[in-house]
Image 1 (cartoon, rainbow, N blue to C red):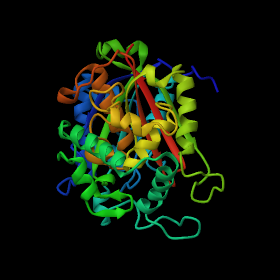
Image 2 (cartoon, one colour):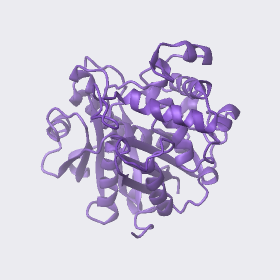
Image 3 (cartoon, rainbow, N blue to C red):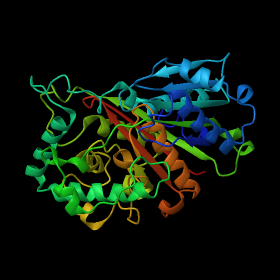
Image 4 (tube, rainbow, N blue to C red):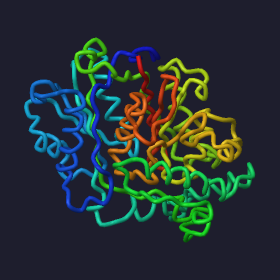
Length: 386
């Protein structure tokens, strides 16, 4: 692998995101149009049928596949591709778009992440997983096993998870397009109904409907769109053995995050992530997932997450803000759109356009992270200013 093959060769010049939530009054096409036309306006694109050369889509629950994008945006006569990679789907679609521009095949392409799981009639990804060590298990039940092992090993507690939930609920109230806008306290989080111990209601994210769009182009063309473009520093995907059956899995880390981070840091030239990253959007399907991700990404030492949580390191005004728009927990989680939505947040933050949730940064880099499946897959994108 050439770790510098894509660094700074591709620029994001426009992004859009629809309101996430239980969008019963909207079809997937409606959400795609809302996100795409915000991206068009943001990039100054007036003739998308002429300016967009290819489209890369990501959706886990599409009704009509690529036709939902082609028909809604009338983007005919060009390649429109669909990718699916668990919860890393949006990041993977972005990855393919970046590769197509970096290699010189296209000048300007669109990336669309979307999903409308609420129309499926169930409240979560699946009623149960395929099975853990031969036993049926819900997603919350499976992830809670990791929480119990982590608590036993490092002395963390439900209070540490509650503080993550409180942080993300606060951040979500500041994001106009988030699904949930409800401040909570640690006491409320601890006293909420138990879903699967140690997870209470506020430790678990809810699936939602939504769409997000990115318009990317060659770095050389970026200034013809805008001055405050954002460069792609890295984008990585990693797959590992299924932890539900992997005998070497220790219930204390997600292997895909560790290996994807190694790829992404090599591409971006990062050796000290805590110092070189200004912010991160990470996959918080459960509060425990966010906690493990702090350590798996190398933002702190193994077992030290609880101390950083207590000190406010990852709060909006902390040294390294995480999930500045509320994360999956409160912004929402339309599976195929989440990775692109995270990039949308980092893009706005780096431009200084995040409104009340704007964080102070050094003009450095911002990371987004998704895990999916058992989890077996991880996608990471790193972006930054010129």
